[in-house]
Image 1 (cartoon, rainbow, N blue to C red):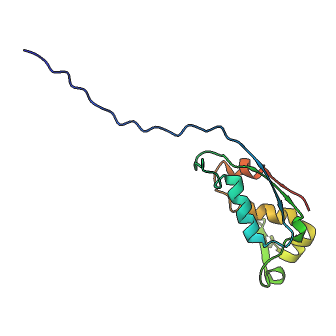
Image 2 (image 1 turned 90 degrees about the vertical axis):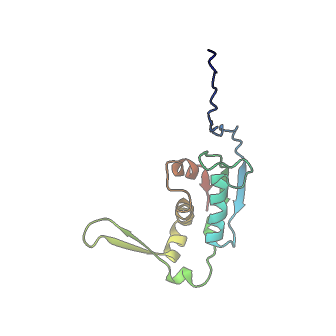
Amino acid sequence: METKKTTTTKKVTKKAVKPGVVRNIHEIDATDQILGRLATRIAVLLRGKNKATYLPHIDGGEFVVVTNASKIKTSGKKIQTKVYHRYSGYPGGIKTTKLSDLLANNASKMLRDTVYHMLPKNRTREKMIKRLKISN
């Protein structure tokens, strides 16, 4: 009696290999640009979504250098009405800061925080935000 050899084929899922990440430097002048639109553009560059080799699990973003952050504009009446809150956790520990004060005192922190909250909320966010350099 002759026995047949059966062959089974396994489906193999291939993982994408980390490509040779090439990081370019993008210089952006923030003079007279709207805060949210500028932050969105920066977040896309830091994440690497502008590249054809974009993979969501690979940090393939680029370096971004922003100049003249203190000359950013906002749309509408946000400069007078927008208020940022932070809470220490203690009773009476809520602090408020107006956008106009933040823009006058520390415009680079305002832009950095805006971009920071647009990046994915996982362990790659800290690596991405380190590639952002802002000067007033």
